[in-house]
Image 1: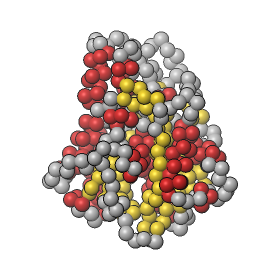
Image 2: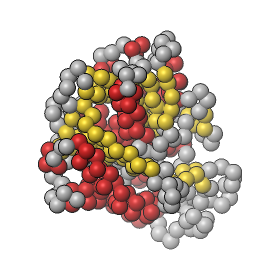
Image 3: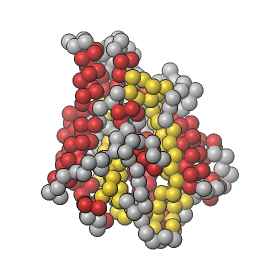
Image 4: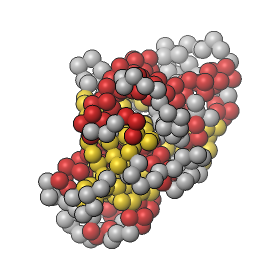
Length: 353
């Protein structure tokens, strides 16, 4: 028996927010003081570091669970299964359903239950639960789905990553330009075909000094309500942490799989920051005393931004459907899924397509 991803789907919102749209924003330093550079320079520097040109925001009437449902529908159809056959629905997110123009998160009931309700699944033995694991949530959800299947507790699982980060950002913080909305979903199931599937996985949580590198904090605008919190990050610390730890986790996972580095065709890494991701891949290959092949790391961040748990499954779905230029997957290709995020958590999966 092997454990495979048999279907995928994604939901990419229609609203496009371009970098130029931030030229009129009032960006402030963390102490509330004005930044000494005009917004055009701030935005150009941002693009040079992150690679982001534009990002997507969800329509006002849609919440994170709605996006997850829309992606899930596509994954179920792609896998050609009956939704009633699902044993688990695992929904990764970080902030629950945040309605447009509100500041309160809603996670009662959990988002997985909402998705199951929207899918009109009657089977009570289809267990629906959420996972809060920072940006690596979808990858961890796939690892958990594999564990359920290996233990004989499930045959088919739906794993979703969905987020509406645009509703929890501080518009006076330059970092707000990174974040976006979206959802990706996959069907993970047991297969009688021994070829392919999940070959190895790795997860680690660094919390001793690193737990609060991403956190909820006040707006940089001192005049706003101090009881309202927004997503904040220590960018430099996250960058250094990722470079020091993600390549090692990826190597550990690949070594467990028994696959040679030369046989890795694609690395689908969390779309956090173009320069950071490039540096991670470069350092990963350096551990094997070689260089990364051209095109091994597809990117979607330029047009879609950082949608947290949704970036990896969305990227996977786009490549499977030939929607990223000069990128494709063929049967037998070895892929590494990898992510890093709030917690601080790191994980990776080696997968044979």
